[in-house]
Length: 438
Image 1 (cartoon, rainbow, N blue to C red):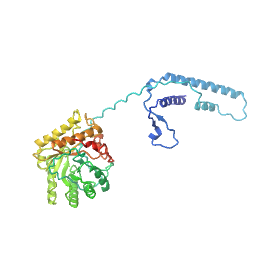
Image 2: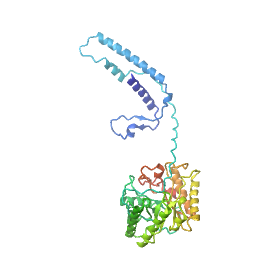
Image 3: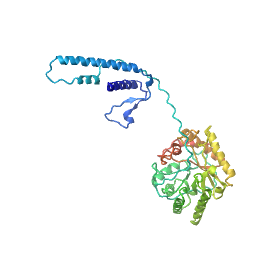
């Protein structure tokens, strides 16, 4: 009884669902990845029946009536069988009943009232993500470090106007699984980057990324300049390894493409003391001078709120990371962009001591939650357009964060992984002609 009732109700409800299917149903077999096989392709649309409005009394009454009919039929068959001699062995008395249940007589019509599909409930807002240094993609730890570059910035203050290009892009080459790409992969990615900018910023020299970038740009005439990085967050040993790789690659390829080197990224924000940071900066500068590479500008990169005049004094330029997506309030993209420009002007007027101020990172994620700022692709595009124009107007160079989505940051929140203007497979997330503004 329970099995037959279940199958009956399921059949009735399935019938109702198919009858009320939406114009573009989904094939379950296809959704399961099954195609061209013997599976029945069932089409259905979820949420087309409001089960709370089904008249269950009529459903169960009809089933009870069906069971009574079947019982009477079994009794009639049994009576006929017992009074009539049969030469061959008869099927068990259960067989007719089973056959009747598998192919039941026509059932009385059951009307299930389908309600209008309710509007989907809004997903609960995720908890605001902690401000985990969005701007500091930690380098992959799977490979030995290998050379790190940075740029001869030269106080251009040129900005980037209506030519469809951004002034610079942050580039982390790591594969989606965190492994190191080969030089051909780097070359292919940088060829796409070169269509959007003429300047790239690296954070480290691990995975041979600095040397690979130099080779890719040189071999393919990509017209990109490199602004390198020495990673110091993991201590003296890691810093020394990055520095050795940097010196080796710079001597191998020359300094023409190398426009500067940032010693660290947001290390004060991570808890490093100012004196320790200044010590690393001086150590890198002394090594470059000793190696005949003293023409390469040396500086650090830090969040604007933590950049001090002491750090500016030992840096050849002041490079700041500034975001508005973590602000406690939001009105529109224009206001968010103006907030970023105002903060850069504050550093220029009160901290930089007359040195060039440049954005080491600024950008907008297309997914996730960092507070009241809506993280959508439309807003990412709008922010890229408007910061490009505002920075050019205010006289600031900038690195837009970032080239590709950081899916390699496994376990990171969605906002941290979706700043790229390319997706993780290096497909553009939007038409870059939209950057032809200003």
